Length: 361
Image 1 (cartoon, rainbow, N blue to C red):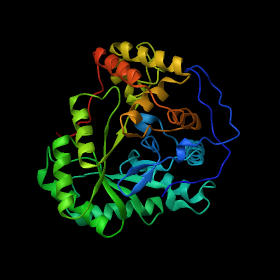
Image 2: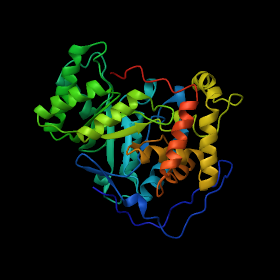
Image 3: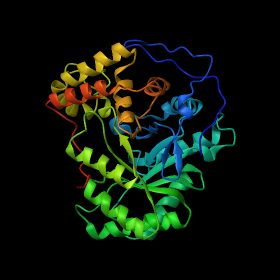
């Protein structure tokens, strides 16, 4: 499943966040082709998330962005990225499912793949809508995603969230839905998202009795989300052989160094950023110090920390520049002392990211 594309197009790391240009190197770097195991799959050490593709409310998506998104997707492929995360609920209003549709279109039209579309690992999440009450309805949701993606089989079919906190009877139907789509060959592997440690053990054990391995658990995981519960989830994943996929590794952008208390993003994020950013200076300063010393950017350092923790981060991308910068998070490792410096600074910062309301215990 490893992506082995031949290309001479790549990027250079940028030196601090105020640098604005990227110069192509003559030869591709070796590290993107060093895959990590995720169940039966071989995936790049970092994937990319597509939450913003179709989301007008939070990320300001417009259809005029599609050409830029396609260029970003192509550049990612050319540099060895083969894991792309999406969901059947991504896209607001009439654009619901737009993320999957765009991914399908880009895969079909990709020049980098040249007929090797099966080498891309698409991990999509199925929403636990209240009307999805049977395993058959969940299988139908998977088939609808495959239609939008224009592919025959998903890399990973994932539960977007657990209903254990508010509709426990629905939970078993969702689990059986995962089993059914796996047995029908609609997915190569199954995973979950927003599952806490206790519920993660339960679904792992249940799927095991049905002969279905649980390959991944996707959870908010970053220097802003590294409390006791996230650490426990990581411990459980390691113990059970589940690969942790870390979403929001940049804290919705708070760890990029781009924003401050006096310079907030537009839209709904501004309220959240206004509450958390004033207490993040110790962590942001540590990121800035290591970035300058390493000749990296703050986002690259924050993402590399996730990789050093044994997770597969999936930062979101909306542009070629995002891809170029995020790729610089790979090919090197923070030292143990640098990791500890960042974790201590995170503890010293009085605010942390709010957790997803659907995450279970």
